[in-house]
Image (tube, rainbow, N blue to C red; front, side, top):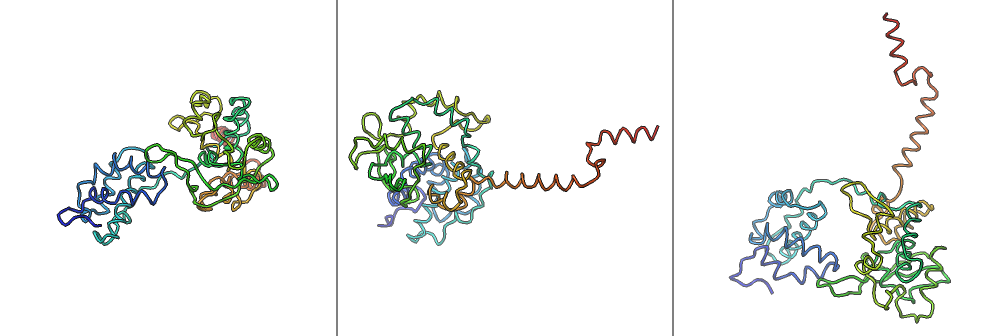
Length: 333
């Protein structure tokens, strides 16, 4: 049902009318981010404005004025765009004005810089309990590259030890009101992840004595693990600085950085980019390629080529300049 005849089609009125429809099309995690964006940015800027009066220039001006990181402002723009798409379908406007917005370019993402090297992985293993469900859970994050909610939702029946693979089909995540939701993965596709040699005893131990329908990596009481109870149980906010630190202004080590680590390890192990994409469930190969060390590889090849080139030149031309400058001074004297 459309808005009532006497009800003005403002951005706020349209959001109130079609909120459930808008949120039904996205994941609970994205929905929570959208609601924060609505309360803190979109509503204060546009709620009282008639949807027909929205222009790309107005939206660009508000985008520049919004506080927060670039990603949080992008969330706000996406929230507004979702409202405008509903308005187009309802015949309130002819086109989505958000599509004409020029968003300032940000720095290219470098998720590989968040990954742990082998020494840092060793420090992580030392910082964890020597045994128990929480250690197994963290090792599953590290060795599979799965998202935290995906590991939490795994069941014994998802494991095929004969093929050394785990089937990833669901994720456990908090809903809009904090309730636990079990649903499809972020990519909404079933995928297989390999069971590597260091993960094999972890999985075998986790399966021991369980029926096929039980959780593979539950908490100590058999329930679902989430980021909050995992961090609290391991005192993560205290020990993570012992594992890895980052430059000032960057976030501290996060559980999702273990997924970044797995991606880098897969490339270092020689796995092809399409296979890495399939294992991690990335939406596109462009996302996967962010973890490939192509820039460093290019720099190493360039260093070798340049060394060969300059090495063929006269040694006198390869000095730093100080000796040549002194010679020129003596000649002048």
